[in-house]
Image 1 (cartoon, rainbow, N blue to C red):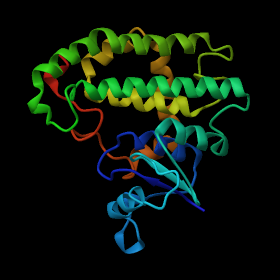
Image 2: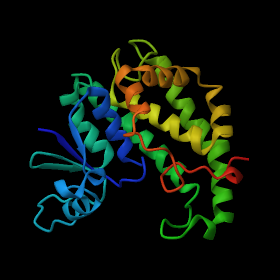
Image 3: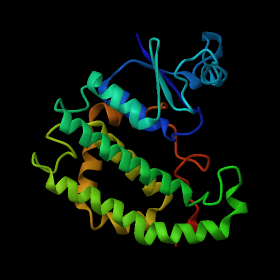
Image 4: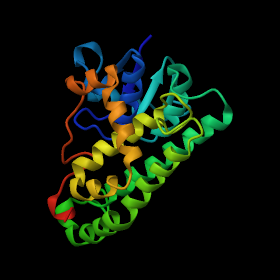
Length: 242
């Protein structure tokens, strides 16, 4: 049975972290909101599932994943659930907790990147909060981005199994998420990201290794990979990357 991924159809957003794990493992899945309505899919089907008042454990928002009758929301929780099935996490409890910790830290970075263009509120347009966005983006470029990237590079260097992966000696969902974060940051903040990555060669090498994985490389070339745009989490406003 195929997994069902529910997320907005026109953006990579947070759903992309789940897509990458499914693609890397070659797992069968349906991207429901992007599917045909005549097959019971499409955005309306995802919104209906989200609003299901009969659900005992309803997700708060998309993305969420359905595995048969089991439903789980929140990217880190979805990946924590999927990873053992997809063989994208080590077996030991310590390694699994460490992988989850890295994923949560990457989620913090994603949120901070998003909040640079919507620092006042997500209900207002970027154009309505440009002065606040400029201040928030300056702190992100100069302080927060280098701190996050530096930490990721340092844990790669300290991995007892070697610097090829974040956890142990095999690919994990944290490696895939790091790849996506670097991709997003290079789109949104090309100048600031280039500067930060110049001091984090291990992060660059890991990103490139993930990009070269046969299944990931094929996915990136396919129409299943939605291009970055100014409706997603990572948005490129040149004036914020001065």
